[in-house]
Length: 286
Image (cartoon, rainbow, N blue to C red; front, side):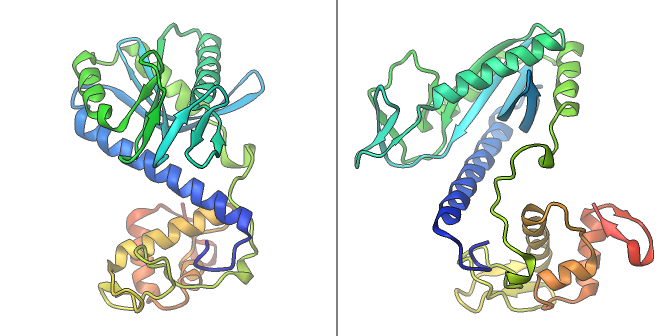
């Protein structure tokens, strides 16, 4: 969003943290796909509710009656573990992630009991950023550091068993029981659509400088090239995140992209990657 308007400082920090967290989760998903070659049920980005408490889970791996619960942190640099939390060298303190992990584990335990499953839960905090270092950590803490992730996943992979019927039933219950986006607090700052600058954002320099092209878009600022299909898909994703209640139509995405791309190309991408509902003027993509 910061490419399209001048953000309030508080919103800029919030979006930076959200983006960094999302990047860390994507990196962990990539490592899971690489190292978990045996059968397992993997669930990502769950929003669940139990006893009136809504909680979010980054990643679950379910196999053989065991659930591995992963909380992903993309912190970078040096930290010191103190009684107050994780402290940077400059003295800034953030909450110890094991507190959040313990709360999430307890909520998940309660939810599993409510649905009459008896799976064991093993909870972990994964520090994904390669430059992260934590001093004063104990070997009894549930931390997995950057240099330990690969070894941990290989070990888990060796222990995996074919998912049982109970495993699959639990996974289905968790997926079906998710809260919808409008049932929990919206974290994305709200800015009126009319006040946002339209265009296609360059993923390399984060400017609205991508020129039009038949197959590729080139950034006029940094020279980065992006396939046209990828540029359109990312623009749709950004629109859906910022305006979850908005309809995805060819004309709407054309306007969001600054009318720099042919509507024929936009329509082709939408028809390929989304499902069309409605007819004629009421047609949209979901």
